[in-house]
Every structure is written in C-alpha cells, then in structure tokens.
Image (cartoon, rainbow, N blue to C red; front, side, top):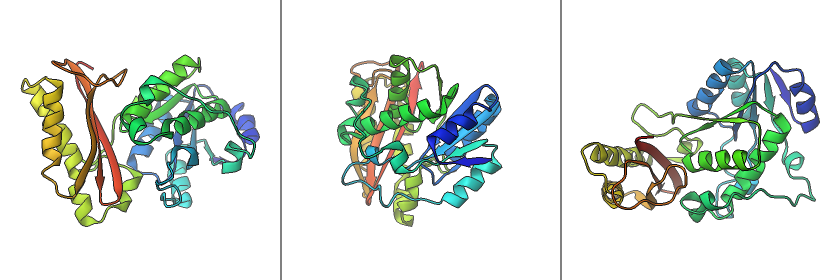
Length: 279
C-alpha cells in the first residue's frame, strides 16, 4: 500500500492505477462499516484509493472536531489488510490553504433534517467530497446508507456538476444488537450504549407498522416518537418520514419512504434510518 499526503503525489500515482478505480472517503477511526465499503470497492474495482481526512468545515462550532476519535496506525493497518492500493492522508492546509474561498452548495436537499440541525454542515461535506473527487479522479465512489441524507446530497452534486463518477451507496452495517456502527459510538458509556438501541428499535417499530398496514406518514412518525419516549436517556432532535429522493416530508398514505431520526444520548448525537416500501 502506498501512503501519500500531497495532491500532486496522489495524482501522479493515480495515473499508474489499473481501471476502474474505486474511492472510499473516510474521516478515519475505522469500523466495520468503513471496511465494508473498502471490501466492496476491492471486489468491484481493479484499484482502490481510501482517504482519511477529518474535515473541519463540516463541524459546527459546538461540535466535536477537536475530540473526534483518531487512531491513524490502526486505520492504516486495516486499509492495508483489506487491499487498499493508495491511502491518501492530506493535511488540513493541503485541502484548505490560507486563501481558500470557494465552496460547493447543493440547495434543496441540504435544507431539512441534518441540514436544519447542523447549519453549514453540508457545505463542508460537498466541498470536501468535490475536492476528493477532483484529486483522486475515481471511476466509482463508495458511501454508506447510514448517512442517508449525505448520500442523497452527494448523488445530486455529482449529477449537477457532471462528475463522471458512479456513486455507490452501501447498506448500513450494524452491531449484533442493531446499533448502527459509528465512530461516535465510542463516546457512549455502558448505560448510554444500551439506551442507544432505541434508535433502531424505533425504526423497526415504524417498519413493522408499515408492513402491518399503517402507511400514513404522520402515524409512522408517531410510532417512532412514542418508541423513543420510552427511553429516559434519549432526547430526540427529529423524526422523519420523507421522500427518499427529495427528502421532503410526506403526508397521508405512503408507498415508499425514508424514515430517519436523530437522537442525543448523553452528549452524543446519533442518527439512523431505514428505507421502507417500494424502494
């Protein structure tokens, strides 16, 4: 595995890679969710580039950028064990030099849900992903369904800006008890870790209600809210039943939807989602 830090070095090495090239962008502190993306890229592509960059511009002023977990030696070992050809680890000044002033904004699909709760978050996401795309020039890029809105936003950006890249969204990877894998799970103490199961429990309750004939969007949101309310440590920020492409909240009977939620457990903010119906 070749470990690189500069854009020029990455682009020089990229020219020597066999086609097609898969890109797996990460912020490090890898878990099985990240590794599942690497493995899929390895299966589907002749060459794999994986990145680690904790992107400061997608963190709000009250969020956990400085405390975000990091373990670079472990991450690099996992990349190498799973067949990454190039690990790219740009420094902050490489991605955002002192005179940096250009941003990528995707409009409507960034406004609800995470965009409403975390102003400026998606501007940071789309800008850094666009820069990663330009630097690595992949044929395919791999992201997880756990960050459902991010997946929608990146698809839209790639379409609107004519990136010649296939965006591949891979299933959420969960712990054996259903908790979606996240680097932030490390913040949870044992009681909070148990309480965090309410996210998936709420989504499953809504999904089961849907399967059993309750297809009204507001009723599905109520099922999730009622389930969350049973967990004293859980403080919901939103529950959503939305169009999977536009992320607009649905009303009345639905045949397909993205159900999602954000919940704070202790000081840790967690998100999760499920696609239901004819998706």
